Length: 109
Image 1 (tube, rainbow, N blue to C red):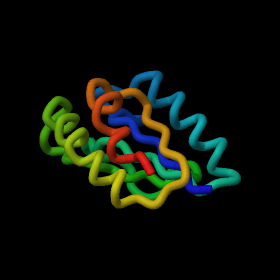
Image 2: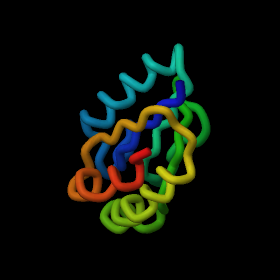
Image 3: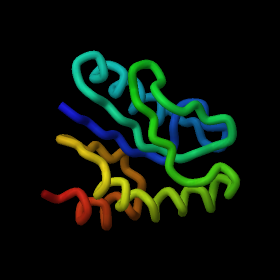
Image 4: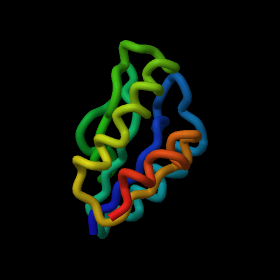
């Protein structure tokens, strides 16, 4: 099964790096042992690319914009990622207001 998690924050993010990102990554890591798992998250300076602990990281946005503009750019790009990616299950880690208002429109099948 192809599972996508999306959350602007991710472990190691110097701008945020909160508990929500750690929780999402913990679930993603466990699922990655039996499924293809991708974590769509924001970019930040020095962000690791590729596969991290069995989870394919997809960095969206620009690390040069800083935390606030970078997060807005991530939110703008997220619907395009939802349309482009191949997935069976998409888990959005609540990023209001966009996740509750817009992302469901782009992930409905």
